Amino acid sequence: MIKINLLPHREEKRKQQIKDFYSLLLLSAIIGALIAIVVGAYNSNQISIQSDRVNFIKKENAKLDDKIKEIVDLRQEIDALKARQQAVEDLQGDRNQPVFLLSELVKFTPEGVYLQSLKQEVQKVTVVGYAQSQERVADYIRNLSGKSEWMYKPELVDIHSAGIGQGRDAKKVYEFTINVAIKRPREKDEAASGAAATGDAEKNRPAPGQ
Image (cartoon, rainbow, N blue to C red; front, side, top):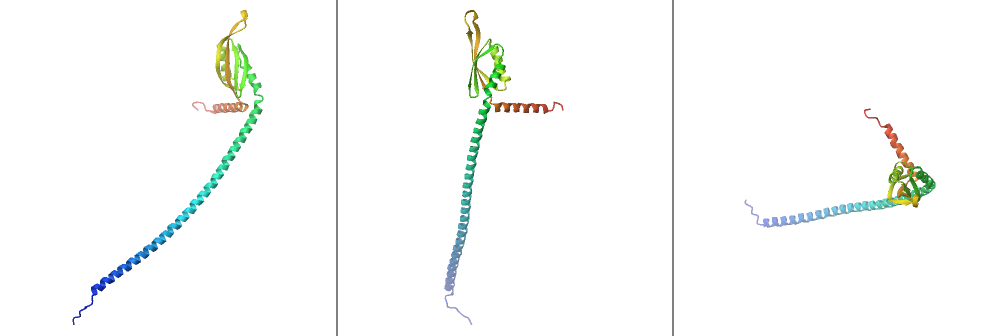
């Protein structure tokens, strides 16, 4: 027997497909919303953790900055104390400096050179005197430059012809002005130590060919 289905099965099937589509669409929307909520919560948690780390690092950096500032202030205080200590030591050492200075000025003054005046300003001495010739002045400068332990870097400021005496006793001389730097006792000791160390190194250096 032939059975004929007179129901609108195609229309029912179409409606079921539409219903299934909307159900799937709704399910997808719900799943998407859940995923967005989970991802958002995870990101929010990560941002919170990162913010806590940044704040912790900032606090630690602030502590380090305070410690660095304390160290800088302490170093400045130490440097100031060292400077004051050095100034006191220099004052104590400089008490005998004029004696050594006068002794060497006389010791290294060549024959034919006469000193007229001395003037000291801090670590510089201005020497004014007379010489029989310009060569005597050159000898005096060489002595101060190469032989003196207390004086160094002599500088000829002025030299000119002058006359001493009157009538038959008048003599032609050369008046000169020299600036020379003077060492403090500690500078002299440091220079001596450096020279001794250099001498020892030269002695211990092997000869060529050894």
